[in-house]
Length: 580
Image (tube, helix red, strand yellow):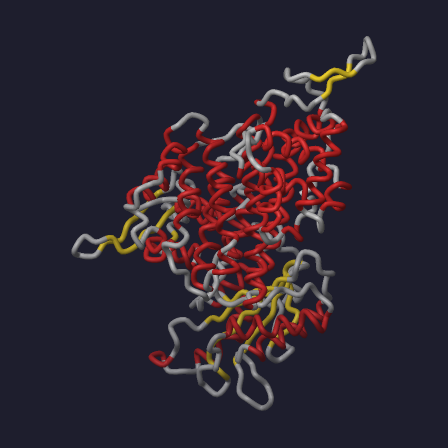
């Protein structure tokens, strides 16, 4: 249950008109009072003799009783209280009880002999009510409504438990501002799936991902088609910015601009600038990352570099301080945004959902120390500059590799938030990890299918030798791995690692030594990508010739021969599905 306290207003009748209006809004059906300060207020929705003016005058009476100079300029208090989509439909009596508890908890009408404000609760849809109050008590004083939003949230958590409703994780004031009812209705009228505020927040977030300075950030906003207004000091120094969608207009036909800080707390210009502070703006790029940006196969190279950066970042959650971990979590959000922006069609939806969910997990009251997150921010930059990836070949396989690594980083972030008591952030990171697992299934099916078929064609002596090697290198995990569908893909990878001159036992041990393996559905899948990354093998094994340890069977002669020539690929129908 979500109470949303809106900024105070000055037009009681205008707000009542919106609440009782049925012609413009699809969810405004049968508007009527469910409760009021005296239980006898006129109801323009059900009483044909009552008018909006009658209700407005009754609510405003204590305000109008004051001398004109003593009346508050903003005297209208308004909150909506919305049930979770999965909750049962509450009765009018239940909503009335909820309204009375909310106005008491927020100080609007505290009860127990204390003077309160006049208020009315209007229900015009099944899943929510609106409470309107005027901010002068019956004895002419201002109510004690300090932090009424936080107090309403705390009471809502108690109501959820008592009524058996979905229990929302308690907030901490770091969440992005929710769209208002007016913004949601406007989006419906315009045929938008999301409000302008939500579209702008996502666009700005993606523009930040991997950016190195003001100029690049604003160039990205302009390239995305946003209208931009910059706020400068008399000295010419840039202080802030506002953005708008070109087709989101107010009643005067002018674009509706939103300051960055009103989109999300970390999207103000000062907070954004913290990301490219600490020398990251002018830091020289390593030679390998320079190759990522200038060499061939840029999308695949960017994804491989991302895998390496994420691999190292997971360790921070064990050995780094809280401020450093917070920086890595925020930078992980940039990586997700960049990956979603450049992903192929078959993974785009889930990656987009993961990035959107993780946005809530990227902020907490623990202030990030920037600079240590440089590798992840560079990875986000490489992804953006590498451009869109194909869904097949090395692009598709390295996408699976990067997602596999990201699952562990996001899971580690969820656990870190849970340890810190950040309930909403932990829940958001967990949701993001689930979307990543779904994206992994789509990205990994083809490359793991190729490896599975190669593993099935390995000679029996080779498979037996690799089984012994696995049991010696990973005695605690070997039996589990041998029963997984991904074992054949891992066996093929071990063969390639050995053919490339690496020590497969050492790489198996190194890959399993990293934390978070317990969260994997398929340990063999994880080890495939970790070994291929460590040995610098192509993620797409179809680029490689078959090793000399494979066998091919002649259906004509019924004989088995050894061959070093590339084998004929089987249909992916019988290949093992990834089980990330």
